[in-house]
Length: 154
Length: 154
DNA sequence: CGCATTTTTGCAACTGTGTTGCATTTTTTC
DNA sequence: GAAAAAATGCAACACAGTTGCAAAAATGCG
Image (cartoon, rainbow over all chains, first blue to last red; front, side, top):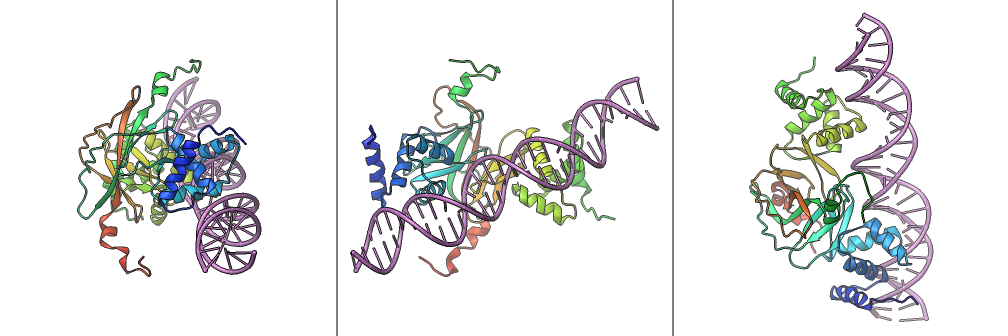
């Protein structure tokens, strides 16, 4: 047995699934655990790597299906960044949160702020459903490390 | 004889290119013409189809490169929708415009409204560069044609 | 004007994300 | 415990976008 130091997160994930009346399958629980532990939206690739690093890699199709299922359940949120890669983050229930996409490292962070969802002027007949706000710029790490062609920075 | 009914648009495209001090190559002019005529952001595929319908299909790589070049010049703006396909629209110079993505037909429209770019609460160290706002919902056409009369309603 | 240089275009092959079909395993239901 | 349903895994596929290299057009220099 592996010393799993976070049964709490496993429990949390399982609870989220049971609230939906769905079976808490290992793959779903594992994906939710990873997403709960992440501070940024995770791509399919990073999830697979994280799972492999945890000693239990799952099939890529299974991962895609779990992510699709989670998105259909409204548990996660998928966003395609500028690199066309979908990244997934936990949905914070009621209100959609804004994202921050770093133009240097490409990471996608989740901002939590009460967005004044001021729908711009919508043409007549258009129905607004949700407003997605993504801030582009440089994250703290990349802003602190200017492109001085020198990567040596402690 | 090619019935070119819009020398104006051709001229407009050429002018935009010359303003950048760049050569107005046929491919660039053609792409800009198509984008000038479009009311919504166009994908690589639709641009290629439109060009083919116009009797002059260009190579897909050339199209990708022209689009990349136009984006690098700041003339167009590329946005990846939920289907992970990049769509291109003319940059309206100074202020970025918001987009509307229809969840039914997938089309991406450009909204023009002075967005109060109220950057949500950015974590310390993060540098905001640009705020991208995409409204999700149903466009006028799709909202007017509900999927009610389909086979099973459940 | 001709030739070297740069830019642009075109073709073919490739990468990588995501999907589909089908067989196998696991879970639920009776 | 067996049948049915859901979930998983493997292989093959589809599609957007990219890279490398060669041909063609534009540009610069003598």
